[in-house]
Length: 75
Image 1 (cartoon, rainbow, N blue to C red):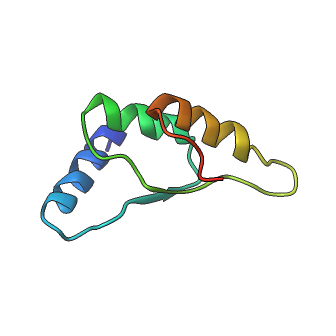
Image 2: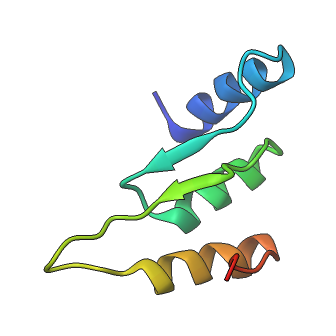
Image 3: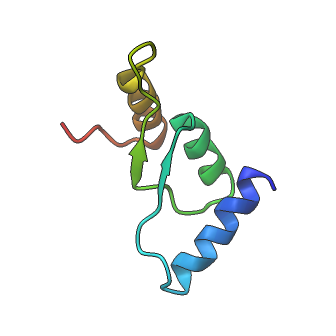
């Protein structure tokens, strides 16, 4: 199943009122934003970044997604 198919099915659940907010974790934030925008669907409003003691790329991930979606980070 492609990311576009997943986003399309999630968008249907939003339209039916079965889902209020979409969240995602452990993926590249900007990839999700690009995929959602390419099919004209709702973007995820909750994001949990990939972060551990060896890898912590929160700022770069969120800023790339924010720049793409023309939104700013919440801080």
